[in-house]
Amino acid sequence: MLKIEHLTKKYDQFKAVDDLSLHIERGHIYGFIGHNGAGKTTTLKAVAGIMPFDEGEIIIDGKSMKTHALECKKIMAYIPDNPDLYEYLTGIQYLNFIADVYQVSKEEREKRISQYGDMFDLTSDLAQPISAYSHGMKQKLAIISAFIHQPQLILMDEPFVGLDPKASHLLKQIMRDHCDRGGAIFFSTHVLEVAEKLCDRIAIIKQGKLIVSGKTQDVIGDESLEDVFLELEDDDNVNDAH
Ligand SMILES: Nc1ncnc2c1ncn2[C@@H]1O[C@H](COP(=O)(O)OP(=O)(O)OP(=O)(O)O)[C@@H](O)[C@H]1O
Image (cartoon, rainbow, N blue to C red):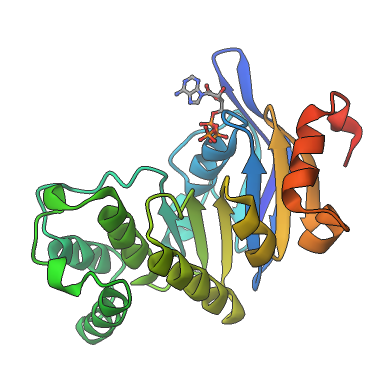
């Protein structure tokens, strides 16, 4: 579904992402773990097609983001870490705008807005302007807007931040359902307990370089993800730990 091949992104001379390669298959929830400033957001933005990169390739469903950006973007959704939505729109106007962009039929959008709006307890707030939403409400709206067009690939940057426990639980469920139906999810998180339970695959990056990736069980072995992460963070020779 998604192939990141030798991705390198520099800010001036600083390599924020350094020769990163990852493959994300359909059916998999893929967690992306790393310290603050490791390069997760930069990678996700490059995959979303909103951040140009210096070297490498991003292939989505067999098409290159460099040469077929529109085709790539049509089948994916990106939920940024800070849901900066159009503040002057109401929630429902925003969802209809996204549904228009992705050409979702009237019938389908009404069904999904009602389904996800009720699920996330947001239906009664959809008539309010987004400027009146809390961070968590904006996050819920961003999540609904992603699922409304049924993308094949969903990219999420810290999706659990700001969500209440019920919404977090629901999000985990719909992420699993999405992948069980043949979609794929690539998301960053600092919540290692969630990643450990939810993810089929995990990648850990440090200072822009991939240090380990694979099946969650293979990555953590008999330890917890937290223990593995902290050990790798302390290890100065991690570049050899593939
Ligand atoms: N626009 C920018 N200009 C210059 N440097 C940047 C820019 N954006 C990010 N960086 C740097 O690139 C590195 C990677 O940043 P990035 O935001 O990708 O990290 P992250 O893993 O998402 O971190 P966090 O967990 O804190 O969100 C950091 O050192 C950061 O300071």
